[in-house]
Image 1: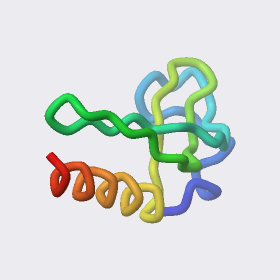
Image 2: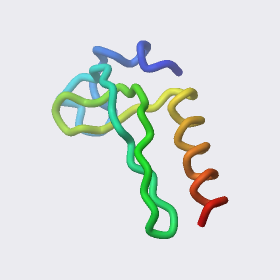
Image 3: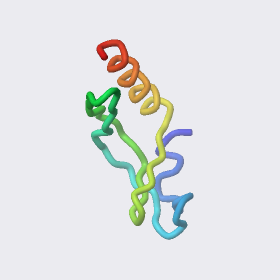
Length: 71
């Protein structure tokens, strides 16, 4: 799935909003250490539910791994 495929479609969670593409800073916390990962997501215009594509998921996973190594 890519975020462009869900953009403009009804939200899976609330069904009342539509997904819009946004650039966000996703917080990632391990053992009290937080970093913010810049990613692009599809976010519901009503409830804020987010859809992540594979690239965003990899970036988040990499941030978790990096924080775990330094903890």
